[in-house]
Image 1 (cartoon, rainbow, N blue to C red):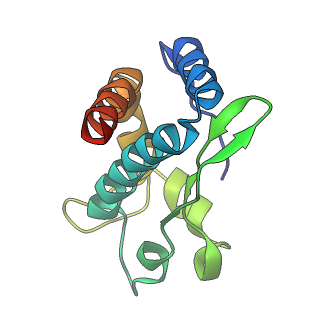
Image 2: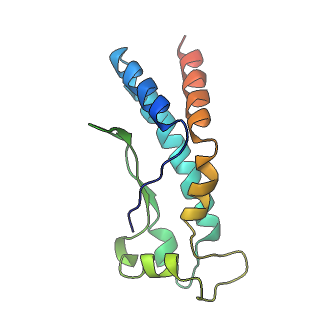
Length: 132
């Protein structure tokens, strides 16, 4: 169920990552990106539908990768639940327990993209102050 998330400030954030890479600070940028991705996963775990727990237990965050497009991290569900993860995610007519929802990954992503660039920048500043 891959899709790409675009948000305001993405170009500015990628420029910041490139600048940090040039100063040997890529690990700080990766830690910051990973922290925000884990917050998205944790929020999704609160609303992912649970019947047997296989889908919920398959949620994960990949290690941030430095690519030609910039830093990339993936938040995903699948593994043993890969045959039905997308079906559960996209079906608005499925019945779920109270507090659980289809779009269990999209909802936290949409919430995070509002402040994503600022959150990453704040984390980078926090990490850098701790190193100095």
